[in-house]
Image (tube, rainbow, N blue to C red; front, side, top):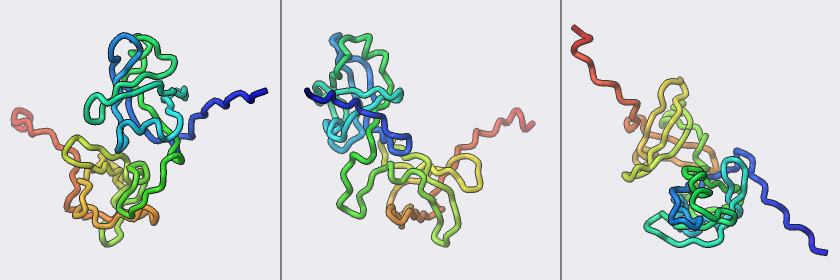
Length: 192
């Protein structure tokens, strides 16, 4: 008698890595748009089971490129537009342990930077890396200041981040490149 196939188990929070987000339905037969965050967009299924935030695993039936990092995918059990619509905006995560090791010292996963301490060149604590964003003009590090307060932004370039030692958990930045939150414009009527 064959053993039943074990159901995939959602990884613990510290090992979850977002690889895609589900977009709008595509047609009426259960297909959906999926924005992939992997270097090869079609590789999102190569890293083990995909999980929704509620812990359900999704199995890819098929997928094809739409444009750039956008795919059209069909998942097992999602058979119509309404089923897909209910998942719009949900992240798809994998187990971080399923990713291959990087070959180059200058190559790393964004997830490996989250939580790393950030210092200046003299060793003074600046904060920790909270998030990494890319709005089209390059990566931005979002830093939670050690002293508290509003988060700081830093362009993720070699000049702004001269030392990045992921295995040594060390990030050294040039504070001259830090940007804080924008201040609202002064209201001349309040000042009068």
